[in-house]
Image (cartoon, rainbow, N blue to C red; front, side, top):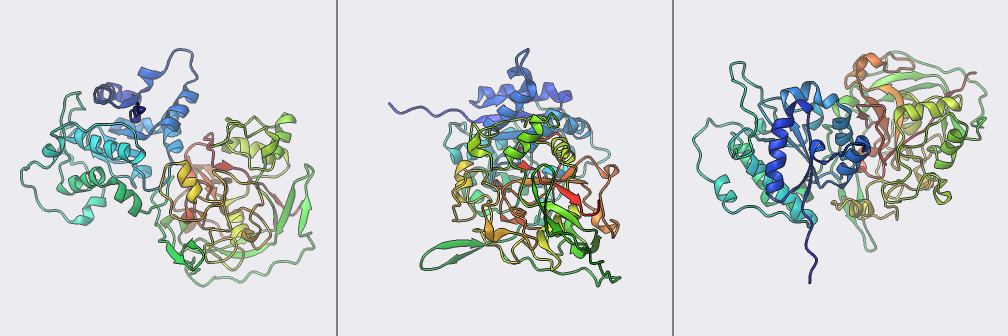
Length: 524
């Protein structure tokens, strides 16, 4: 007798102030055969809520983010909400995984704008949500049955509305000042998005979700994460099929305004610090930071002067981090597994793999223990691309054999869609230094791929427009997010560009794709 399929698992992410409306949504989803997860319904007294929420998001097939004015003002800053969203960022691109669902007329969050939303307060909105859930269920082979008549309701004639340009589909709606506050969702409310173009988009997702998932290419992020995707080209030969990304074109924004001649100092090219960690010299001098062809937050391209510094040759390993823990200066990683290995940190077989599940504060504590620091964004980018402005540590052409990124193996792990035919043999992290040809101009490994690396700066999308020209460091008054660099095993080729900027909104976040690298000033 064939084994029955499990139901679709949906995590409901919301602000506490919206608990009544979300409880109504939870009740309706449950009655319609969805295995919905709501904290008030699932958490038991005495359970570690953070651990249980993390587990629930990990196991979820879809995260529905319930947006409202109160959510935008307060809910997004709650730790459980941020935790859910950042864990969701590990999912592959092109999948229906995060669905913003507006409980009332309100703005979408900046970090969620890459995902099209559904309005649950409008006619047939709930049915549109269920169509998206059905597409996801079909995609991953789990059980969810669309009720009879729903497609008919969605295609039913509606009152005429003014025509709108297609470009407006991508714009966020602006609430009118005189529009009364809509009622929150009720368990039996049937709702449909007002705009014909919204219907088209969501219906297409529901009816041809598999095709959309294969065709849509946009980096994560996440994040979250509006990024300009780079198209890929499939290059076929007689012996193999290989994916390559277009070259990163180095285009300075303007001619540098001053000439800088570094003082020649006889620093050794390589050093070993007091804890036995090997570091490489990045000499003093100028380089052009940013990219004219990347995302908005990578612009403008600008000249930066840096003092000489040393950078870790390898990402911090489990064994190196364990030394700090045993010395009493570091806390244990918040999870001792990796994404696919139940035994990882503390397992001798993975001593030479990068430590993961460490937050910014843990990374900072580790580097401080070594009498070093997290690199600044500018230090990290110069170490990765050198003075010649190369797009990747090895040059301007993407080469999928020179890094550990989300290849075919990763996509299988995530039940996602691969944007490459390569297979490096790693389901998640790889031993540090595995890619000899992927070294930066200064002999530093894995600055593209393997794990994201925390840097010292706070994130500001407009920082490049007014950052200081010498040894810049973004200060905490610029925002709540910390910056990461370098891409990872679970992100695509676009995020591996040396100029790509990623950010997370809580220094305590931990992910299976985030690790550490330290830097140290060359001058005593």
